[in-house]
Length: 469
Image 1: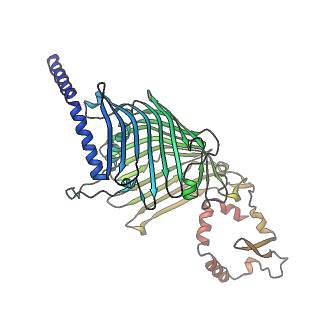
Image 2: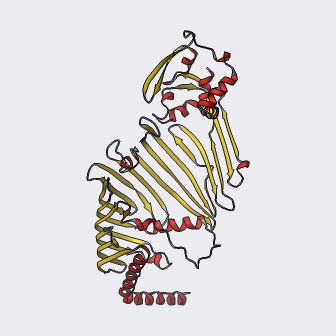
Image 3: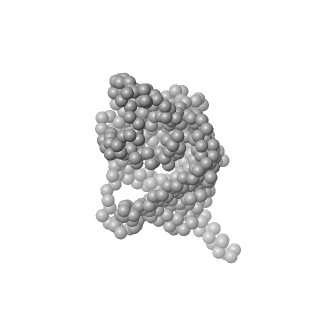
């Protein structure tokens, strides 16, 4: 045993000495290959003014420039030092040990229909020698992607003065990072939008070897909007904090990869005319569970939980890609106090329900299954147990007023057109039970053919209790 270990050690040392002597040539060859690949595959010119080894496993670069041919400069790094961890390298894994980077910038520019980042969306030419019968393994693909991400996360990092900017014909935004640090797995940095227009903090921990991560993004001030969304899409979005945690990555076998973790938010606020005419506020929410990635399927495990304030439910989603595309969806709640559900409805989303108070309990189950090649065999069940649910106090919309006379104002294009008294006081008033059923159906089909379908759906959302009174 000692002789074998000694021989192995001699070979390792000899190989290391040989590689150390030849490392300058190896580095030059690697850089030339990178330049050739970028030029032929993406039409990118890579220029490096200076590079050399620094110590045993670190490489220092100065003035790196990346520029698409015939377009604006994409990236510039003044000083970059990268080290590789030696021990994982012995097993064929290239893992970063340390990154030191100073004064770097990424500039995204779009003019008319062209940009200096078009190559990111360039379709790859299909290799005619590839095996057309080769099957895609989602689990293997996800595993490679995770390794690629975590292998590129260094044990230690010191980043100074990094900036990324975007500019098109109508919009300009800039995010700068004065300093970012990873020390012993602890991460801490700041993002500044247009100098100090907004400030976000990113803190957490990363464990590249264990494939574990916890990140918390929060702003210094309240109601700080995310950049670009309002100008590009008319969406105003802000939050107090976003959290993400990846607890475990478990490669059970070649055809199954499981990810367990959670995602949450605090005071998420959205404003868009397609959602509501006022701000929609989600005070707090948390989703935790397991994502199972199989050979041809992706599944959110049944043990997963979604919690919004005090309301909690269990979602289940599964998509099968082959041999037939199939989709399954299920939602389940335990028997809970019904008020918890109404309290969890985001403020501003359903104005008529705000302030409503109920008593009793509820329990809900939904099951949906669809084979895209057999739509006639779709499965859909929706069951609500709300026998003891009672309305104690109405919200902004008091449905009881429908039982009394009231005045209706008809609007057209936002302008009041006519005022109608609905009730016996109006000489033309006719009670509903005295109107022919055929007349009722004809009117509904003319005005709103989906009326009954929507009514049934709303019943399942507790509104039918309001209509019974």
